[in-house]
Length: 253
Image (cartoon, rainbow, N blue to C red):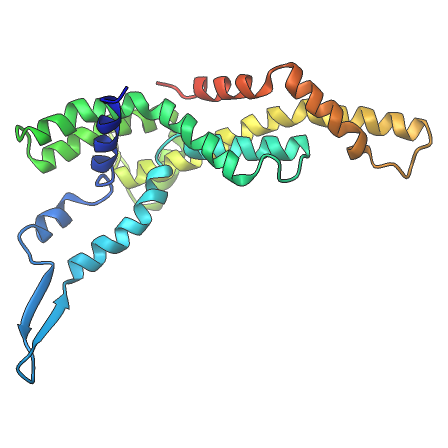
């Protein structure tokens, strides 16, 4: 297991470069990030190039962009909807839900990271493959994963927005169009799963509310009575394991 962690880290580092156009790397290659020149009073003046500012700005956005290209959005939305359906307020907390979503995302994305490591990172580290071909090789597993989860209607929607069409093969779809369509498809799928999660808990709420009304207990909140039943039902069916397994199985390979 110890040898796999560096592989995953190297794969993630290379994936951070996926959204940066190759032309940007070509333009910045060989250009100094910082220039030093003589000052007006005999000293030295330092100026930072626009390339360095662009890279630093991109680094702040890359984590959020990269999460939007993985299984994370669907998982965290479903977990948040489950908490709402249970009616437990802020239990589990946001930190726990984020941790669970990140760990499950790592398990789901690990085969893709392995392919990135084998096809791009290893040849690049061994200097048998240049950076631009390695970047293209690293994008192939991610593109295949995203295409498997993305609806064709969403691709057509964003292709129309970008005034792009006539894609002969899936490989012809531009990566920004695919990323936007993938995220939209993930939102749709997450809300569909959340709808199915809500059904049994809504039934319990309706049954409890009907019983309380029949007994004349109008002042007692149905949520107070139904909450223990919903928690008991979720625990009896081993809900967390069932949900995690179903979420992992919902991603098409």
